[in-house]
Image (cartoon, rainbow, N blue to C red; front, side):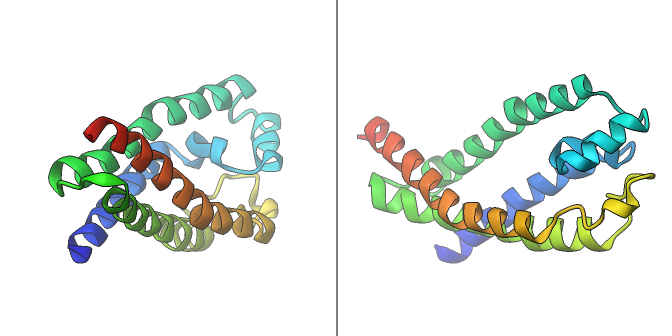
Length: 163
């Protein structure tokens, strides 16, 4: 079962990578809402985007992507894997979200954003690294503690509905 749940986490990581690939298909400025404020401000001053477009993309990302990620986790844990009760749902969601976090931190942030040119926005190269160390620490903290909280909340809600 653990192998299956890990693979489901890899699948969710692939969904995230697909979202990112779609977001940067016309250039990394399409995902500038994920960058730090100094990069966003530079893109605006260079005329590459507007504050309104950044806000719209942030909202779109939250309104479209977050429900997809949550639905993915819930469908696999409860419909596919047949989890019942808080404990069973919690550990499965925690593993899926932990694998997602590893993919996001290591493959996307560290490798894809940090070591390829696909996420480079012309005119902002001097602002690299796009993900500063203090931001990386916060992302790791949220990715571990935050994902545990999310898994607990979702497992709690589902326990109310399943029983």
